[in-house]
Image (cartoon, chains in turn yellow, green):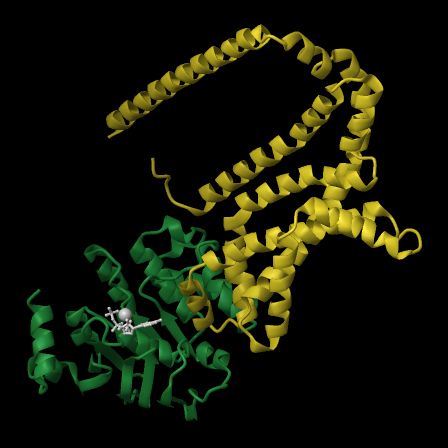
Length: 278
Length: 239
Ligand SMILES: Nc1ncnc2c1ncn2[C@@H]1O[C@H](COP(=O)(O)OP(=O)(O)OP(=O)(O)O)[C@@H](O)[C@H]1O
Ligand SMILES: [Mg+2]
C-alpha cells in the first residue's frame, strides 16, 4: 500500500514540475514577443512620450494618490449602504406575504427605473437636481448627492444579484427548515440567505469592482477625485501620463480585490465540501 | 385524517383519503410511484395546504386554513428522500438550529443532547463535518437525528432509503429500528417491502389518491384482499 502511495506521490511531483516548466516557458515567450514587438510600432516614440513619461508620472503621482483618497472614501461609505438597501429590496421582492404587496410593487418599480438609466445620467440628475432645490449647507453638496445617485443605482444591481442567489436556493431547503418549525423569517435568515450570499459572492464582487471604478464618475459634477485630478494634470503637463498613473492606482486596488475574492471562495469550498473532482 | 383532498391543478392527488394513526403506531405507506405518498406526508406536516377535508392531531383540526403551522411542525419531525441537510452548516449546526432557534433551548444543552444522539446513530466523530463530506447514508442518519432533536411526537419518513446504495440502506434502516423501541409514532413512505413488513404495525396501500387497503403486515403481504394490492406486491417482490 505505502509502495503504491509513494509511486503516486512521485508521479504527482513529476507532473507538477513538468507543468511548472511549461507554464514558465510559455509566459517568457509571450513577454519577450511583446517587448520586442511593441517598440517596433510606427508611432511608439510619440505614444511613449505622451503616455509613459517618467518625469510627469513622478510629479503627478502623489497628487493623484491624494485625490484617490476621496474615491476610496466614497466607495467605503457607499458599500455598506448599498448592501443594506439591496438586501432589503431582494428580501422584499422574494417575500410571499400579501401584506407586503405594496412594498413589493414599490421595489419592482424602483429597481426597473434605476436600472433602466445609465449611472452617469442619475449622477447628473440627482447630483445637480437636488442641490438645485436650494438646500442649506452641507445638504447642497454635489459630492453628497452624486454618491447618493451611485448608491441608489448600485443598490438595484446588487439587489438583483441577491435575488438570483435567493432563488437559486432549492425549495427543498425551505421545506426542511419549515418542517423543523422555523418561521418564514428564520428560514430566510438562517437557511436561505447564508447560502444565497455565498453563491453570489463572485457576481457581487464584480459589481463592487465596477463600483470602485464608477466612483470616478462623481467627478463629472465637481468633486476633485482622481479622474478629475488626472484631467487637470493632463492639461497642465500636456501629457496623457496622469491618466496612466490613475489607471495604475485603480489596478492596485481592483486586482487585489478580485484575487482576494477568489481566494475566499476557494477556502470556503475547501472547508465545506468533499474532494475536488479533477 | 378524514376525506382529505389535495390537487395540483387538475391533478387530484389525494382523493377523499381517510387514515387513522394511533399514538406509538408505526404506519407504512406503500404504493406505486406517483400514488401520492410524499404528498400525503407533506400535507400532514402542513407543507402543502389541503383543498378539503380535516387533519386532526391531538384533538385539534390543524388543517383549518389560517391555522399557524409552526407549533404543529414543532411536534412533527420529517425526514426527506434527498436528506435536505443545510450544506453551509456543520452536522452539529444542522442539528442544533431548530432546538436553539425554535424551542429556545440553550446551545450547550442542545449540543450535549445532539452528541448523545449522534453517538447512538454511530456518527459521534462526524459532528464537525459538513454534509458534503459525508456519505449518503451518513447524511440521512444526520437528517434523522436533526428531526429527532425537536423531540417530535410524530416522525414522518419519506422514502429515506431510496437515494442510497444498497449497502447503505441497512444502516439507515437500523436507525429506524432504533426508534421503534422509543415508542415514537412513525409514518413512513417506502419501497422497501421487507422493511415495511418487519417494522410496521399497519401497512397502507395507496393508489389513485386513496388508501385502497390497510391491515397488519402479515395479512397485507400474505393474503391481501384487494387484487390491485396483490398485483402491486407481486410486481415489486418479483424484482
Ligand atoms: N408540487 C407539485 N406540483 C404539481 N404536481 C405535483 C407536485 N408534487 C407532486 N405532484 C404530483 O402529485 C402526484 C403524487 O406525487 P407524490 O410525490 O406524492 O407521489 P409518491 O407516491 O411519493 O411517488 P414516489 O413513490 O415516486 O415518490 C404525482 O402525480 C405528481 O406529479
Ligand atoms: Mg415520493
